[in-house]
Image (cartoon, rainbow, N blue to C red; front, side, top):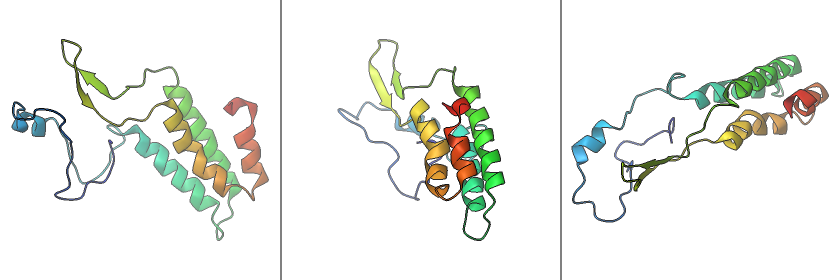
Length: 139
């Protein structure tokens, strides 16, 4: 999946069926690897970093529920920006509508879980964060 860590030498794809006809070099050209995730190519990365901020704010040494609430507000805004956009299903087909590639992608539920699941768990002892998570504007 985009943004996943890849260990050097680990397989990146699995070919099913007859692979002899594949243009392996063309396949390599279609895969982009880099040392760091970027916001432009990986929108989930921004969500992940915001969730990390909220978790640090709710950590036992910080106890900064206000920051966590602000993060929830920002995540809500991010979700509103992508809510009406089409999400890829991860199935790529050729001109004859034959399935050629399946890639793991985040759907709407995946983004919502990424945004709020960990904050919800960390916020159990912080009523102001829990109230914000349960606010009607987030449902």
